[in-house]
Image (tube, rainbow, N blue to C red):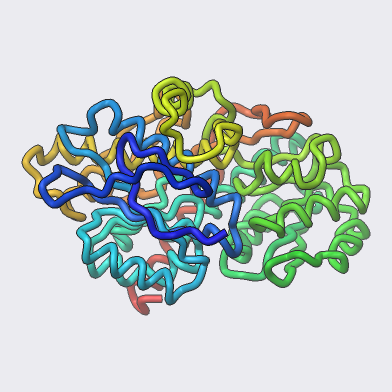
Length: 419
């Protein structure tokens, strides 16, 4: 499927497969422009499709309700295919069109765009992607994860293991990961925590994209781990779970980052992977108030951005979560500077003043400051029960002292080298 570049605004019925009526904003309209050049066709496929659908549905909800201070949000969606030249071209076009925020949803793309976003003062949202040290807003003022970074996710999982086993001393934790910057990101945190908590740590990298992991998982089985963390995206995740099942590993001791969804379970078989765990950054399902509002005010009116069957899936709700945080940043920007002008620095002030935001109970309380772009590092662990993800914990934060020590160490290196 080839996704053409399209502009989405309020009341526009548009999907990735069935084009609807697309409203293109005119120069006279009061609009705030966001750009979402993302990977719909190469690596992340259904991840991006569901995330983007939730994000756009939330923006449509806001616009259907009249926008913000009379302004409507324009969401310019395009496909960069996880290709850096295409992503840079999309970013530069968005810059010429006056966007104040860009969300590439890709670690390699986000890393490549960091220097441009900082120089151009365009807010780049790196939800569950990018570089973990971007949590340091003093070093990366225009790069905003606005979500638990990969170091935080690893810290949450290790603390969950500790909660279950009471003491990790002498335990063995295995980390199976895609051999890319994204996959290697948690390694320093896991190594530090292994020394601090006394567990044995072993890593097994696999070649991207991860469609052949058959040589790794028998080694994992022979290592007799107490816990297994697997870290990939797209096909790498489904292959990892299939191999874990094939090698007889207990799925209630197999855990992922946020990148696990109902669609992954459908590929393998929902009952096959019953018990598998993941980090959950927001409430899944259709019960959250923002999702209910979308169902009633957007989907019911035929203005949804994709299949109704995907509303409420994990990745869809990630998109709703990030749409809600972005919009909260706009509201805060208007509170600080009601007259604008609508620029990247204007929105930056708003995003970096979000306080105790929960998206009507959908996410743990988030506070973003000029120092902390992560928003507090809260999340929870969820377990797959065969039909849905159910919370295994309340919202919590863990090992943030270790995480922030690594953030500051890495961000200081960035200040010196620009890398």
